[in-house]
Amino acid sequence: MNGKRKKHLAASALGSLFLISVLTCVDQLTKYWAESWLKSHSPVTLIQGVLELRYLENRGIAFGMFQGRIFLFLFLCILFFIAALYCFIKLPKTTYYFPILFILILMVAGGLGNFIDRMYRGFVVDFIYFSLIDFPIFNLADVYVVLGGILLVLFVCLKYKEEDFKFLTPGKKG
Image (cartoon, rainbow, N blue to C red):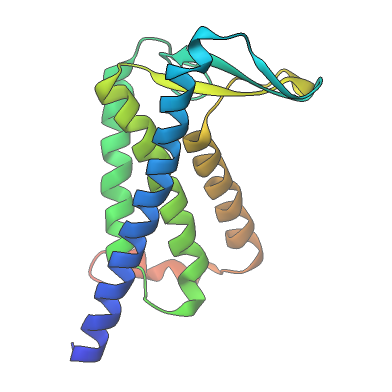
């Protein structure tokens, strides 16, 4: 590997870590605000009948499912982080794969934000309520993961072909 490629890889890794850190910090700061202020106040209506902020301690996994199964969630999270790290390492460092890199960044930041909550609080702080359809209360980390998932499906269906993911095969270079 030549020096120019090493610098490009290092810059890509540092940029990814920086974005993951920023997104995770924003998530944690909003949860800190929700826990320190919103918890002791009535729900705040942002758009009447559509969107409000209300505090909830979620002891389940996604959108309140599997209540009280923290170890299952932590185990699944660790497996996800291992898989994401593998993808980061194997992902070809070309502009063609930039959308996949961005999707990984979103999903890792979201997973990390909720992982931190589970490790330090024993629950996830949720506070965004989309009341128009009575959707479960969620947080920014959930938004990152869901947005990443939607983008992944769209890009896999509309841009990439099966052979574009051969880099994930063990032994193949990214």
